[in-house]
Amino acid sequence: MIFPLNGLGFAPVPRAAGHVAQMSARLRVSVKMINFVANMKKRLENIATKVKRWLKSLSFKTGAIVLACCIPFYILSFAQMLLPFSATTKGVLWAVLFGLAKTCQYGGLTILGVEGYNRVKSWLKRRR
Image (tube, rainbow, N blue to C red; front, side, top):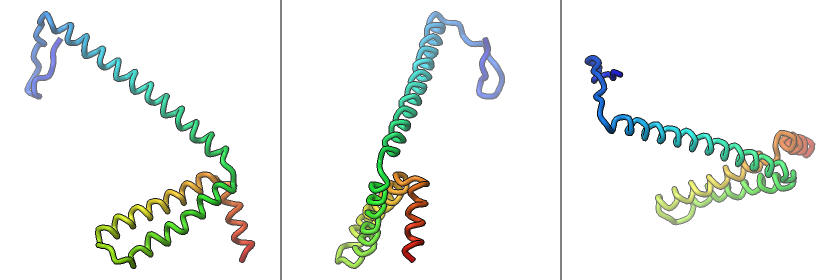
């Protein structure tokens, strides 16, 4: 068996008593890592399936409420700039409140789904 030697050529692998045991240990570690990754993939797919099932069980009304919650967070994220706080505090408040607004927005849209989005869109058009 030969192995590359810093790109300069090839040299024979030294045969030592522990060499086979070392290779066997490396192989066992590799197999354990492959099994770990495969199990983790199955777990993540299982979690994703459960989340999808849970989101489908939520009602249109729940999605509309979560979506409506983003409005106060958007207002607060920009209105807090008028408060007499330091620039650092304002920046942190803005990031937190704006993040909550985006979370509510995307969460609400996810709960509503395509069907709910079309219902909200048609309801807004009828109001005009």
